[in-house]
Image (cartoon, rainbow, N blue to C red; front, side, top):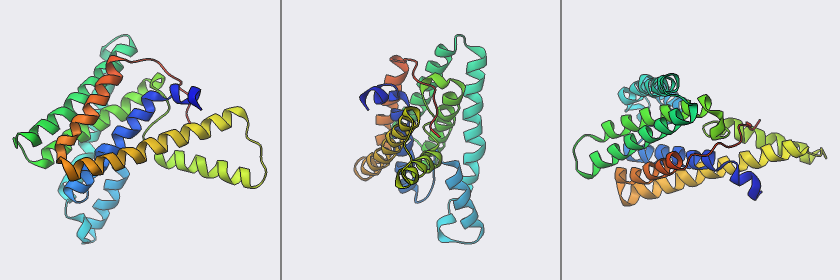
Length: 224
């Protein structure tokens, strides 16, 4: 377990950061995901149907192009900066700066909360893309649906007496690690919102800077 955890540190931190940012802004704005694009599609549909949870439909629409811009920025950095490791570090540091700016805007009341959230959307687009472009960062932190489905498959197999192969067991443990990281990130983000508000985004900014400054290639194996 400890060996697997050491090989997934980057992804674990990124999963925590993703859950943190999503929970903080979802609560603060009453319904907006900065990293979970699928969630915004659902909320946008509710807004089109006149549901009370769809009142942020303008922001929800803006998340799509901004998330894509963030992902595109990561792709441009990878194409422009060599080696790949340096491009990954630059991408992560820029995302950290975006998080920090969003926190500072809130601390000094220098802009609307919506601007803080949209900066976080761009940053999450960059982080999601760079982990795909540089698989050495570890397994995808944003595929929570896939991770949970993998855990369900593993549980069903055990119920019918199937003996997992070592690599399958490792994949299950990886999924558990990433799901727990995301859940704890959500809890921490919710607590930060209740105590310090958007200023809490300084924590994920710091965590990203640590990943960037202490970048180390890890396992590229993806959980099923």
